[in-house]
Amino acid sequence: MKILLLGATGRTGKLVLKRALADGFEVHCLARNSNRIKPQQKLTVIEGDANDIQDLQKALNGCDAIISVLNISRTSDFPWAPLKTPKTYLSDVMHKLTTIAQQESINKIVICSAWGVAETNKDLPFWFRWLIKYSNIGFAYKDHEKQEKILYSSELNWTIVRPVGLTNSSQKASIQESWNNQPKPNLLVSRDSVARYLINSITRTDLNHKTVVVS
Image (cartoon, rainbow, N blue to C red; front, side):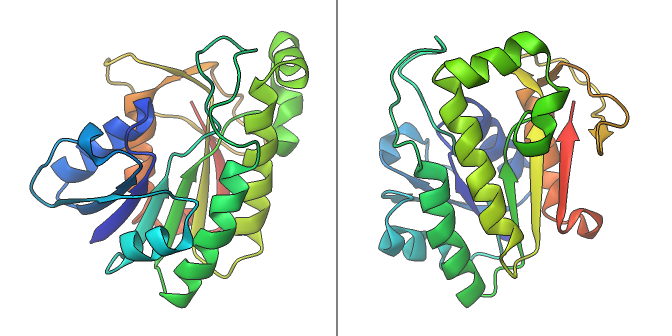
């Protein structure tokens, strides 16, 4: 199976790429700077912008599935740091991506969203809801919700994964799936665990048209 991976140069995306190749998938990566991705077997890197429809078409050529770990990025982790990407970057890309994917009969699309998007906002601790409302973190949550709605209205087989707070821990742990806040999610999950879950979601038909919180 050949996967298009969007967001491969990010902290979670790098782990998704590493595990996808280790699991034997062929991977296409679309990145603005191809020099940031080390050449490897079964890896094709296309230099371009995910928000450019021609670049997306080129990157999707021959692919069976898509994993997106794109996000609205800031210049630092400080909640009020300026944005590096447009406020509607995720939804703009998803509009183009779903159009092309439906034309190309892509089998599956899996996206990494976030716990706290849409109806799960009420499940967050108060202090984090406050940050989303009053800091630049909120732009990502708003646009994740927009891109999710685009997927909901598409004819694709999709899975939306909403991880809780991400850590860089390398300690292996089983992942917990939560539906409608049951069971109540833990507050943290490792990026590596989420990377594994995203890859496994590609072939899990039981997750088609499902939105799941993972912790």
